[in-house]
Image 1 (spheres, rainbow, N blue to C red):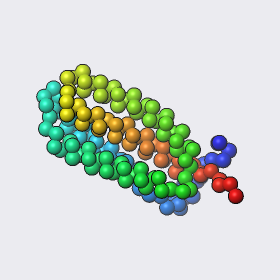
Image 2: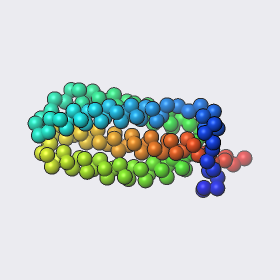
Image 3: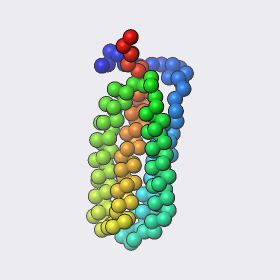
Image 4: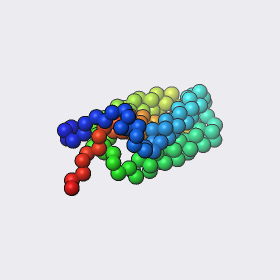
Length: 146
């Protein structure tokens, strides 16, 4: 697998037109972090859910837009992307689980806990997506069989 995917130079990678997948995921991550901070600032009281819910909705839309744009790429190092994404996802699912446990330990219940869980899922997908896209972008796509 590695023999087919050699690293490309920065100039070669910059020359290829690439959709703003990482930028959309970073925007999504920023909105989720802001919403999480708003939610955490009210612990142990019940937070108002309007603003964090709106942030989570826009964040979800940005993430889905990035995934859609990524799915339309033909010449892309998909094997490298999935290897990096899986390992990064494992790390961030553990991290999100620990953050979620802190909210449960602080007696967050009901709709606020559900919203925090949604935000943590988005967080756990955003960061591995950015890492994997960046690595795969600068890897050579596998050669197609002629």
